[in-house]
Length: 64
Image 1 (tube, rainbow, N blue to C red):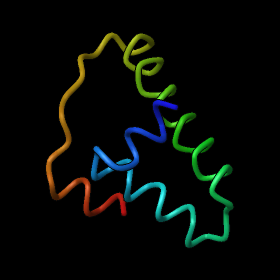
Image 2: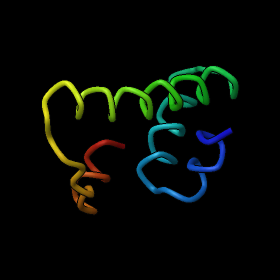
Image 3: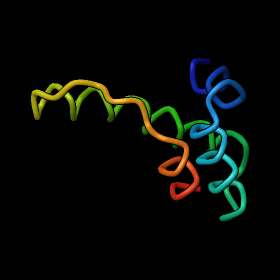
């Protein structure tokens, strides 16, 4: 449910979802990939001992 909410609220999440859809994934598959991406971010932060840094607009456009 959080992936579905972020899909419309966060431009980077929406761009990632749209990219998955253009690759031929179904709606459910796109949401699952987005949810997995959201889960991996805090796990990598814990692993590396880093803090969250908001992405810039340029980084969001490059991700799409």
